[in-house]
Image (cartoon, rainbow, N blue to C red; front, side, top):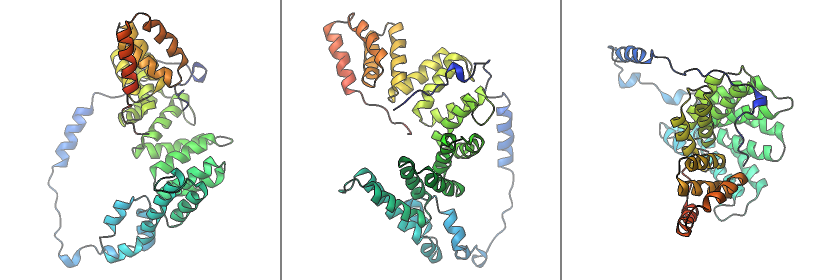
Length: 335
């Protein structure tokens, strides 16, 4: 996987770091808390006056539930008989989605068949599921049918699906010519919904000035959000922000902390750089482990440094380091 995520010098010069947070947050929090517990008058309703959920039009309910997963649909179907009947197409879409994934990945005792996977996803999409629309869009994109892919992404995005909004934004960035302003709009919507991949992509756009003014503090803020949400590439870029003082106040300690987090989750460049940091601190055996992991992931420069260190270690220490690398497992990430 290509992991060059940090803009190179030709993509814009660095400027002075600015703090991301103001000092007025505590007072604002106190004010909000005081308002939260103010007296609220709640009118009493008799059972006859309760909202009749069955009167909600089918088309409105189906749009609201378009992004639901199967457990959400099952719960919503228990509200009333009308909802159960109205949501039947979306429950059927979940079954089609399940079969589509089986055909795509060859799971559940079936052979991989991309055409059958696409057919299942399209049938699910026709029943209104944004989850199926996104999966069908992915296959169309891989087939090179970008117009069909974008059409499905857009339909799902307009129904409020954060994954579709992110994919639509990225698709616009790669279209010819790129639609950067439109891409930024959808990435903002997805990012504000908490989708970490969109937060990372939005940070890259802000960092490089793609479709918007270049803004390093704002880019660093979104990198940090994505990193805190478990997105490993964002962790690596947060480390660089702290290291260079771009968008965040320079902090060697925070840079090392985020670099290790990325390295422990399998980011090969982070493993290389963390290994170099350990080497500079005299932690030879630990350095060898991370440099060996980076080498196995394709970072050829890591092999040269590792070999230099190995010459300084005993045979026992070398064997121990290789054993640790063999038994190493990446921590989970959100991508």
